Image 1 (cartoon, rainbow, N blue to C red):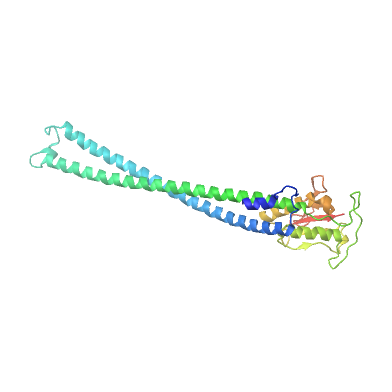
Image 2: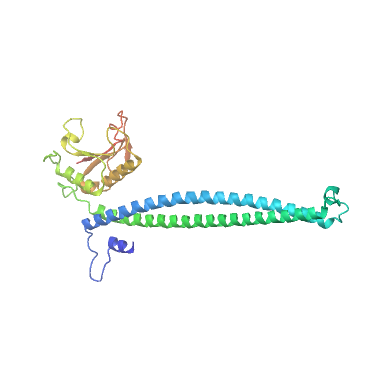
Length: 307
């Protein structure tokens, strides 16, 4: 991780400025780290599952220990009771059935005492075994919990490095074509097989490189609905298919794409972004009217329009 950090942030030497990050190397490192994070997430999930089982085993072991301790305490009371009875008695006040000459009362009392003492020893052994099991279960629970914490810390560290690499990649976002010296954008006509403007194409390709897109991108369409698509100045980045609601992961991805486009709008020439029935022209999100469907309300795709 230290070597990755050194690579990510660069190490300036005397007389040399920090070199400009190489995009291909950054993307290769990003792919490697994302794969590592995926593995750490799986490992953490496995540790959490193991921890849950260990906690259940510890709970069961402690319950068994409590029962064993209660049984031992009860047996100990019985032995103490017989011992007190023998100590306090002069064998003339005991029940005649136990201490008559014919029944051999003293012998019976000795036998009862021996039996109870033997049983008490069995209970003590059971109690000790249950205690060992409970201690072992507690130790395992603690160990797995610590291991899960280490894996989670590793994941968090890796994600911090990923964030740093992504920031560097964002800094390498291209500048859209046709930008005037005053910051305005020269009009462009659609061209090429995809029938979109060069500025739109630069934006689309930049997002394709920056994000792992799950579905197709729709840009030009001939239907004149008053929007930017017929002019070749807009693209829809689909987060689901068939007008269905995107998964939680794809909603998160849509948020990231929308945020990235807005962050780089001045360089790319982004006019506005629409996502989840909201529009943002660079001054914050505003709610839009209900158009009556998942697709019409842009819940299943991020719409990016260009100048």
